[in-house]
Image (cartoon, rainbow, N blue to C red; front, side, top):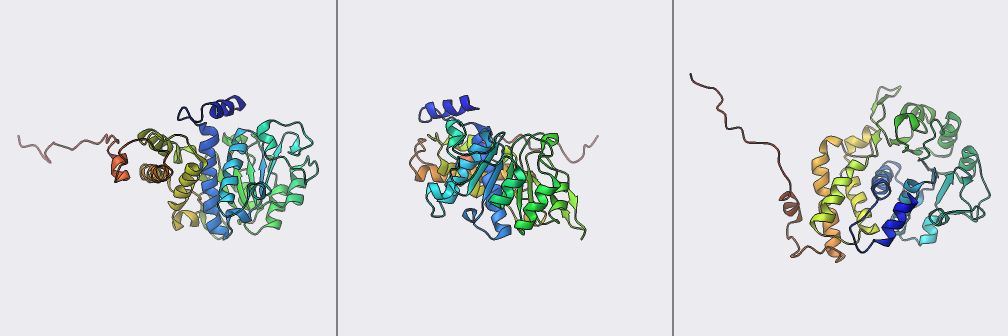
Length: 311
């Protein structure tokens, strides 16, 4: 992952290059957090974020999250002050020996903390994001502690596969008395609440933005892929979530709408890229949706057979 990050930096302005496990995950997860804000009625900047797992995915999400917070009028340092990351050695603090990527989020204002439960009690995060690959790391005690601090805790369990998830949807909902917002990296079981509501927690899957980014980047010849474009994709994806989706506990639109989602997000990215003068396909398409659709292949054929044959 570090090698991939180095390649991205080296060729940023030469090739259309992005690491999808980092950039793609970041867009999808930040988009889910934007949708969660509609439920909690709190801005992105009003949350505190605790990442459990210090790999490339966590760093990528945290970097885009910083940009989202800065868009709400905060400095980079103020944005980073809302983000905490724990790795295998505990909370990332400046006294640790760290990689360049991790050092961006190292804390000098907090002590060394080894236990996740202790970190939750001290940091009091409103958003807990798991990307550790440690099955069962979010215990009932941890989830309950989170629910005593916040009315609607936000829990993202991103570790793939299902058996590596920090907790299950059932566990998260029950431990938080059905009050949490839950998103997983793998598909999760639907959960029925005591008052007979059916919750369908969503999967924060890269498929929501992968086709859109590839479409926009290649068709409009966009260089480089900027944080602004990634945020544009995240915002557009969040806008496509309906009130019905949210009522069912989903922070993403129905996967059945993926063809439409792809076009809408592609179009939004392209519009922003031309505004920022980093799209080099000329002339600029007047109707970008029509331009995108002109490159689509429709596998469906007109049926030329008669309704009935006369013999």
